[in-house]
Image (tube, rainbow over all chains, first blue to last red; front, side, top):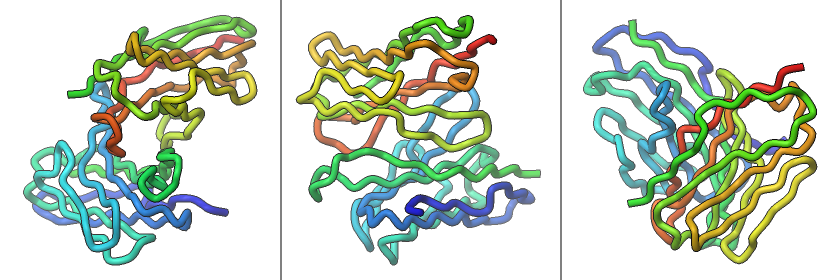
Length: 116
Length: 113
């Protein structure tokens, strides 16, 4: 089955620790995204990547880092510099209109991070 | 800067009712608009994608329309069922042909048996 797999589903972290969230897709999509969702605030874009070895900051990139070494993988690291990391993190991918796709966005099941 | 608004924030209806969810956006130079469904604690599921050249898209009991000139999209749900209870979100590109989306805060729908 094609889709997007995020792991872990739940993660607890102590203050001052870095943590990496995994996102893997087998949809052969070029573009991948990380969003953060907080109650009452909607989804906000953290980072996105339109091609391997390239990525751009979104609206709330401070305190986060990413890499895109493989087409199917786009891990997100939440660093100790992120002041309020407790949130629901969503990874997404799309085929992209620039590569002949529809631009439709597909999401993983999310990772819930709690800082203790 | 694109802004997406969804009204109402919450809606409760009896089973079997037809209903309309509203989405408005400020930058009408978009090439598509997408509707999603989110169940509690889950990721988003894509429901419908409307390209700028289309005015409507249908999938089963769902019908989404797009009116770029007025900056509005609607999601029509026919013969609602309790299983339709979820939060519905719409999303539009940040600008024109961008693949970055701006999301509304969603409408939480409850369908009562």
